[in-house]
Length: 257
Image (cartoon, rainbow, N blue to C red; front, side, top):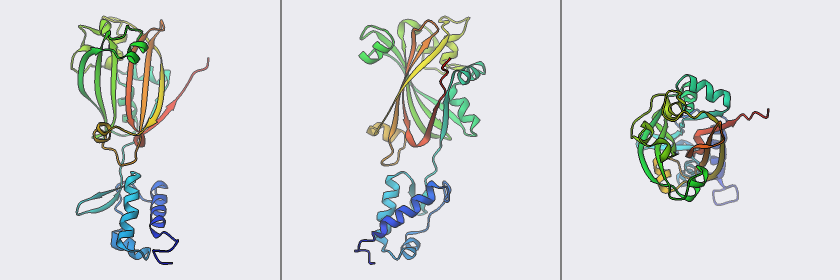
């Protein structure tokens, strides 16, 4: 059939390349055949090939580099396991769960501290932290990186009354992480973390999230709100994370004992 018929050659190009990429028959970073070669292989025109490549770009599978060609998109990916045993193992080692698990998977983690501010709590944050609406909270804003690529924004909220005057309220990194400081038996807070409750939803990113996480067109984000409780059942922290959906796999282990 000709290109104007019912065979839709661009769809065959899309389907074939997508299948090769998702089945790992084409490795991340691998260069794809040129437009000329694909046009010859599928007996298609160059505009048809470009249309197929545009679809694969929109799906986040392919990137183009000026003067070099088209490549399978190389995406850092991390599997995050949330369990009590994992949390304690990393806390005892003085590591954050994110950093520890990224390293265990042979990649390089980084947490960039973007800002630390004290603001009135929104109604949602106030409710989760058992505060009066507009009571002040300290927010620590971070960007999580893997292999120098952004993978998630994470804002952590704490009642100002709990953290005022401590390193948590200051724009500096905290050795051993915030939870290590909160749990330090010789520190000013001395509250032991007992459990957390996560609420996950998927959505399309805002413009700032799209740009900041360097997302491909069509890639959604996972919106995660985690409320962390101490052994007395009182909320200690609320984390709001916006994670690139194509760079994460979440695994939860729940003890039913």
